[in-house]
Image (cartoon, rainbow, N blue to C red; front, side, top):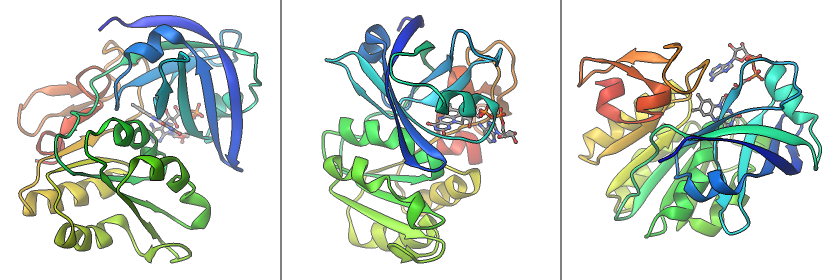
Length: 254
Ligand SMILES: Cc1cc2nc3c(=O)[nH]c(=O)nc-3n(C[C@H](O)[C@H](O)[C@H](O)COP(=O)(O)OP(=O)(O)OC[C@H]3O[C@@H](n4cnc5c(N)ncnc54)[C@H](O)[C@@H]3O)c2cc1C
């Protein structure tokens, strides 16, 4: 797969919550090639920040040539993105990394925070509608259901405060889901502590699990080595950007 650098027009930059936005960018060559779990590195060409920032492609419209990013505003780069308007130009590098294997049977996708973003495209790509389990702090963090429901058999929700769905964390509800639903693969993206718990539960149930890591990274193409970790199975330094961001759970958590 070719890595491309394309200037794309921002078609929309919709506010979802005060700290989360959804950006649609017209980059036809990248939209046609990107697979679920892959990411792009972006920066406005005239922007203040030298380094590009990595974002999962949360969905595509390959016929129209668009990619969709759902992002949380946390620092300088994302604040600059949040100010962009339809018609502005974004420089996009991608598709980058290795994405999710598309599960053949009924998968369970588990996501927390902005780690839910890549699960939308993955859910849409599954041949059998997956179960999806998402968690957030409160009601304002589980807006994702509206993007996931069209592609999911069922979306289970947990919130820390119990304002929507079951009170608690995704890993509190996951055993119940696995006990009642037949699942043949688990894919997860979110905070490390959540993914560790998800991986452990999958292992206890004998279900293969893939995890997607959102480590901080500088270059996104395997040069700066800012995102490496020690592979627990391979015993080699693994680059999240180039070898991942998706790995078998055992490679990350042992
Ligand atoms: C493969 C990959 C996919 C990603 N997909 C998404 C996505 O779909 N949606 C989304 O909102 N975000 C995603 N991220 C995270 C996103 O890249 C960062 O939030 C973004 O780069 C922050 O840029 P900034 O300039 O706004 O923040 P900065 O000014 O660079 O940092 C602000 C603060 O956030 C912390 N921070 C920055 N990046 C990260 C990170 N990756 N993990 C933990 N803390 C961090 C910094 O340490 C600092 O405290 C992804 C990251 C990776 C590696």
